Length: 107
Image 1 (cartoon, rainbow, N blue to C red):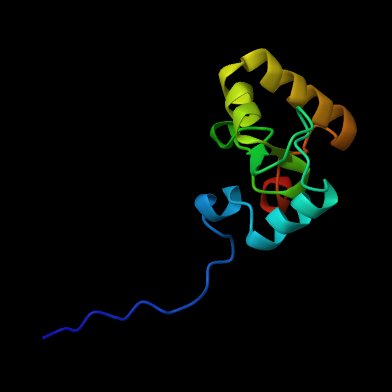
Image 2: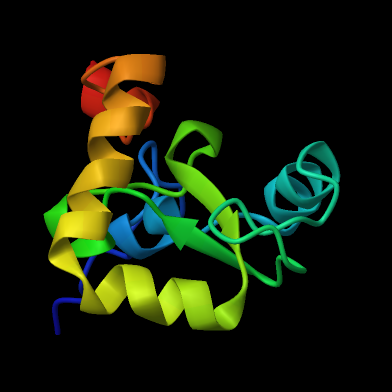
């Protein structure tokens, strides 16, 4: 009887897309502290991190793609495509065209 060759156990060189799209706990805290917990849309209490470039369009969980907002503003940004595009244009002017990419996208 021939036994199958076991698959070698090694770590992935590139994280999965799901992992690349998530904001880490450390990054969430850093973003919250940098913005003093203030919603960048209305000035209220920021409780959520918004992907400026949505994950569906390739937006990654990187600091330059993060926007601290409150829940109502987060919903408003997702419901209003013009508002979303305004934030995208703002971040492009501030961070450059690749603001939403991570190091694996830039290689």
